[in-house]
Structure formats: structure tokens, C-alpha cells
Image 1 (spheres, rainbow, N blue to C red):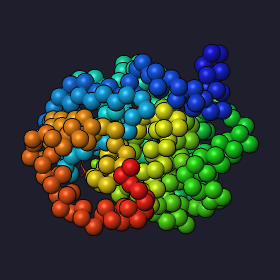
Image 2: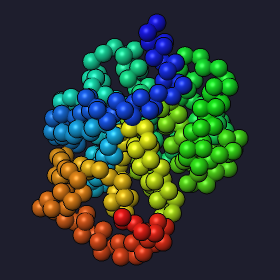
Image 3: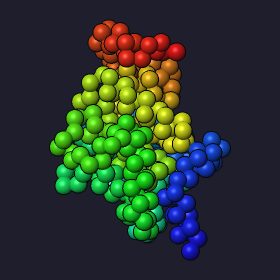
Image 4: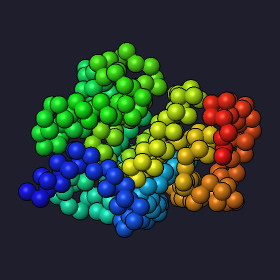
Length: 288
Ligand SMILES: Nc1ncnc2c1ncn2[C@@H]1O[C@H](COP(=O)(O)OP(=O)(O)OP(=O)(O)O)[C@@H](O)[C@H]1O
Ligand SMILES: [Mg+2]
């Protein structure tokens, strides 16, 4: 019975309470310890440690095939570690029963690469999906929650459109509205800015930052875009050769003497000469 009450509170939006809890946050959002990930006999991650506090935006970086998506899939319980532990909101993902795991997963949101919207549902229907698993909320409550989430992502009045009628940026925002529909405590995003023009990508960054600040949400994202990483990352984890090669704030990792780190920031510097001026046009006065 206690659970039903908690659930109802979740639906009606206890995000502020969560934000406050997040500030004093006893339990980290994500704790990965000595994680080993294998596909068959191939070891992709070999002893990875990452701790992500609540209210933080944490970016996972690495070359193609370095295991970023694999790490993310372990964090959300899609893959089971070959060795090591993954804790989500203080709970071990693969220890409790199926019921406990479902309950835990209902507290997170995932923005898959490409959005993964259901084409047969309109935007409102897609955003309502995570709410339908909650204890039967009345239709008008669901409609109101959907409206609020669409407003938050800048899609006010677009609920009746079908995914095929949306631009790439709108699809991303609709997928984000769905990922945050049930007020997740942790949001996972696999390359949210990929394929977006710089202005849409910057708007998405602003949105992620404000979710983190307003609701104390922890956000874990995979990204290659240095402009975006500079704008929103509190901390980053860089993967190379199955290990963490650098971890910390951007300033900290940039000082790490590792070929991938040098390469990543070196290339970004070379390639980034046109980006800052555009960035400045998008958001005058940035960086502060
Ligand atoms: N289901 C799978 N079965 C076997 N090998 C896999 C599987 N998924 C990924 N791999 C391998 O594991 C390695 C890491 O893959 P992963 O998708 O985690 O990389 P990534 O860092 O996300 O790369 P990208 O930037 O290209 O998305 C790759 O070599 C890939 O071929
Ligand atoms: Mg990937």
C-alpha cells in the first residue's frame, strides 16, 4: 500500500522533493565498480570504475568501438556484467528479483540513439508510454503530464503529430519528452546531439542542463561533440583499450597524458576553429 502512495506521488510530480534529496544525495545515481564486459571471448571493458552523483551531468567519451554504448547498457541493466558491480540509485541491478528490477528501472529514463519513437503513435501517445506502466492514472492526468513535458522540450501543441511529420531535432525532443515523462531520477542518453544542426544541438544542451538544475536529475550521456561537452559536462569519463584513461572535470582530463586524450582534444582544437564563432552567435556571451 505504501508503494501505491509513493507511486501516486511520483506521477503527480515529486521532482522538487527529489531535487532537494539530490542536493543532499546520500546515494550516488550510478556506481560502476571493476566492471568487466565481454562479448563471447572478447573483453570490451576491463575493470571500469565510474561514480556519478545525483544532479551531475556525466559524459562518456571514447573512440568508436571503445565500449561507450556497452557501458551505458550495463548501467541500465540491458547487459549483465561478466565481473564487477553496477549499482543504480544504490541498488544492485542484477541482485533483486524481476519485480525489484522493474521498480528500479521505472526510476530512470533512456534516450536511445535515433530516438526510437513508435511510428504508429502520435507524439502525445509516445510521451504517454512510460506513464501507462504506472498504476492507472486517469486519462486527464496523463494528458496534463504529457502537455507539461511537451512544453518543457519546446513542442507545445505538437502532440497530435506523428513521428514521420517531425524534423530530426523535433524527433530528438519528442524522444526526450518521453524519456523524462515519468520524472526519472537518472537520464541516460546515447549521442543525443548526433545529426542535429549546431543550433538545435545547443538548444538540446540547454534543455539537458536545465533538467539537471531544476529537477536534480543525474544525466549520463555519450557524446563526441566537444562544443556540447564544454557546455554541459560536470565530469567526463574517457575510455580507451577497455579501461578508463581519464576521468574528472574537463580541465582535469585535458591535463592527462594519454594518446587518446591528446588526440581527442588536439583534433577538436584543430577542427573547432569555425565552431566557436557559430556558438557565440547562438548563445552570445558564452562561455560566461
Ligand atoms: N552485441 C554485441 N556482440 C558482440 N560484440 C559487440 C556487441 N556490441 C558491441 N560489440 C563490440 O564491442 C565493442 C564496443 O562496442 P560499443 O557499441 O560499446 O562501442 P561504442 O564505444 O559505443 O562505439 P560507437 O562510438 O561506434 O557507438 C565493439 O568492438 C563492438 O564491435
Ligand atoms: Mg555507441
